[in-house]
Length: 168
Image (tube, rainbow, N blue to C red; front, side, top):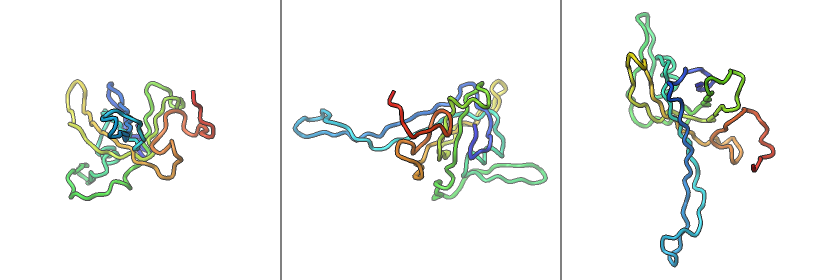
């Protein structure tokens, strides 16, 4: 898992869950009651849930923008708890998910979320069997610099030509 080009570690054996969501607008007319006449696209969301298995204070701060990391001669710490109102728009960065055990150069199944931001931190697990796990949920923001159909992310080889979309 990389965030903004920085490796933030591996996930646990449960892997990564990517959930695309459509927000459809239902078209109904009074004369047909609740029967659908059609549907319009109301946008899309993309959520990514994972558990970092190799986290430390450095990659916690990278993945969780509201945290503050302090370093001193006695060690490092991350603090949590900010005054409400922070705008996370500028914190949204490229999130790249590379499937293990694919070789480093194999990007066939890579998932790239152009602008992802941490929207939830789950319960941090500390156990002798699983180690320390940091559950994080990221949400994709629309990247307004991208073309229609590519606003949130892509799956597959980055940079593959998008000039002629395939319908099959």
